[in-house]
Image 1 (spheres, rainbow, N blue to C red):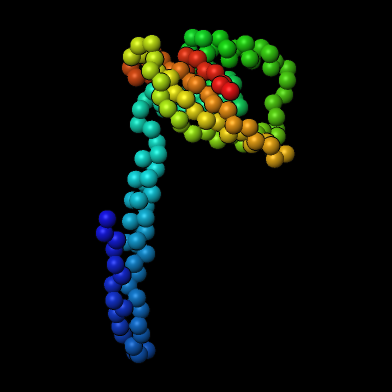
Image 2 (cartoon, helix red, strand yellow; image 1 turned 30 degrees about the vertical axis):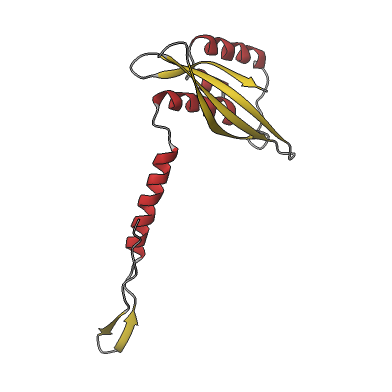
Length: 161
């Protein structure tokens, strides 16, 4: 990649005040290059695979935001049953305040073949940090199913030790 080089300093005259030297403003050009670079990096980080996008949408809701009803919107079949059971068990219990929620980050590890072309599995590493300084690392296997027209939803999920 060729990086833009700075132009030489120009000398210019102002109206009656004498000669002043000023550098040409290059922030615009450099800023555009930085913006293009940032967009390329962001695009490279986002998965283009709709199945993986469906899995990560669920992970964001369930593990990161700890929002079971929102996670349920991205689930089908057995995963929906698991989430409904969890909601029954949590009925009447207040969720943690925003300061009490753990900080959860995840990273994609690998993809696993499904039973057929409509099912795929994705393995993630979850790093869970608690306010008191503790940290837990878990793996989560998220299985997604194509429900039609490229709409991938979570069919099952489980934490692995």
